[in-house]
Image 1 (cartoon, one colour):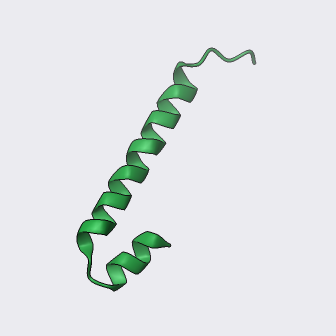
Image 2 (cartoon, rainbow, N blue to C red; image 1 turned 180 degrees about the horizontal axis):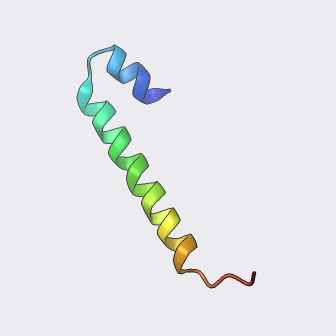
Length: 40
């Protein structure tokens, strides 16, 4: 929602920062989930 609003207002830097932050959080989360030993 914040990304869409920021792009709408032509403040691309905020949009890029938000996307970059989201990707970083997602990547680290997935990496942590993958490296964690599962008991399945």
